[in-house]
Amino acid sequence: MTERENTAADGPDQEDEEVRRGQEERLRKVWAAPKGWRYWSAVNNTEVGIWYTAAAFGFMLFVGVLALTMRVQLAVPENDFLTATFYNQVYTLHGTVMMFLFAVPIFEAVAIILLPEMLGARDLPFPRLSAFGFWCFM
Image 1: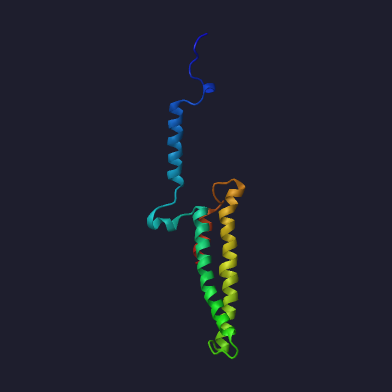
Image 2: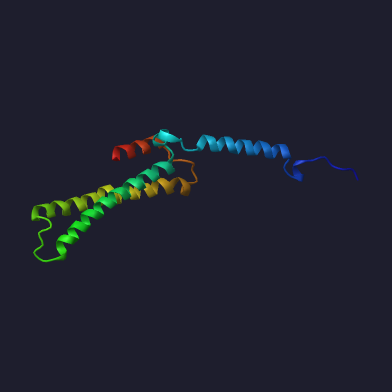
């Protein structure tokens, strides 16, 4: 029997492996998030989803402080920690911020992060519009 030359059936060639590694490295560089101040101009769905999540949790901390002030007011009968008018303002602000600055954005953040993964897509259809929506939200 004669020896066969290295064919595709024998497995990948060393040169093919190096080419593949080089291609993977170039793709990682292209799809990587920008560094430094340019990070805030990224349009990748993962980055925008993280921004939405961080902003929503920031608003949740603010709303948590409002909730604590309401609880302090209600802890003791005849408490004068908050005036009646200011208590009503805090109550209204708590409900509004919790709904429109936490609940809706956190739902959108989860959708922005998960939808491309679930659909097998690399990114959202309009990534710049998604980033613009975040900056309008802020």
